[in-house]
Length: 177
Image 1 (cartoon, helix red, strand yellow):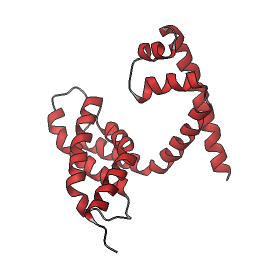
Image 2 (cartoon, rainbow, N blue to C red):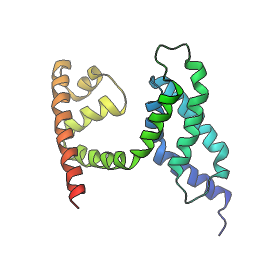
Image 3 (cartoon, rainbow, N blue to C red):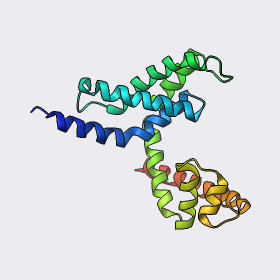
Image 4 (tube, rainbow, N blue to C red):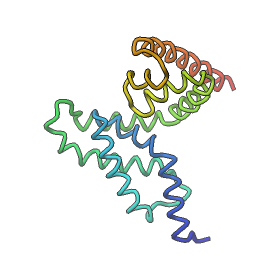
């Protein structure tokens, strides 16, 4: 059965929406600065769109996209040569390979974190999501949730411990199955 071009476009959009955060996380493990990782994600996304006609539906889109990202990072390394923090190619290759090997475990951890976030009170969940998901400062998260900055730091420390313990517990349940 042949897929119509408009179906391919819909598939591309669906896959990009599903994997964009994970792809950014992968890139950010190879690039020290968030803004550089964001730029590389944009370049990677453009290349994915251009080359999507070559992607074989039913194969692992995330792995395919990571390979494109990997080569985009390698190309960007010339630009970063003047930066203070630059990994040599061997270190970057090891990080990339390790990230790929850990992908399944990271998926389990991500699912467990989602369950644990849902167990938090609305105020605590909003605090964590404001602070980490959108990359805003603790001061902004404090203001959003009606806390002082000092109270927000204390709350975030407590919430991180609760989430760590919860994720550890969820993972132990999965391993017992």
